[in-house]
Image (tube, rainbow, N blue to C red):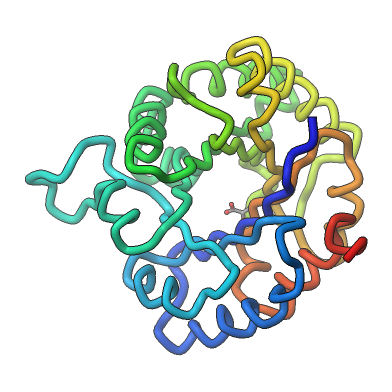
Length: 251
Ligand code: PEP
């Protein structure tokens, strides 16, 4: 099955109004990609609405959402609020949220369901620690996270991001063979759980993707794109990553 690649940037807790210029530059850089691949930026919530106004063909996403509907939850944002601001995606279960806010697989699953109910495509992050990889448990850990973090009613709009915790922000990446083995396992699990819908879900790789290694990562079978942190902050770097995707090259 052919899946349209998605290359998404996660700005994390970075970005001021002035940085919307980077988004405008990115929008110009990807303007003639048409619909060969999807490009998204997930800015901090303070910039979300303004980002939607300047994003052009770049889709905007939230970095997290509350699992419930609008209500008395000071400091939280519902998925419906993100959609109302113009978001199309919502990252859930990023390892930094799991680490800093104690999000469990069950919480992530509820957030993913809330995002989908609000019309957002959830980007569900899963990934093993270095210790788990060294113990030979990487695939088992990710398969378990996946089965428990993905909502029962998930459809093909759901996106999975395989992000080894030890590769995020470290400059380290698994080998292409390791990425390929994990993506094949994730794909098999998704098809096992959801059939045709699982075959249609995009599975991204995330963790220290840079212009210099993007082509090698995109060449791995079953990699449908990337979730990019640091290298998404500057339009030139992120555009270079996008340009390294074979789908962009055929334009
Ligand atoms: C991330 O935080 O999702 C990420 C992949 O970060 P980086 O690209 O900086 O490793």
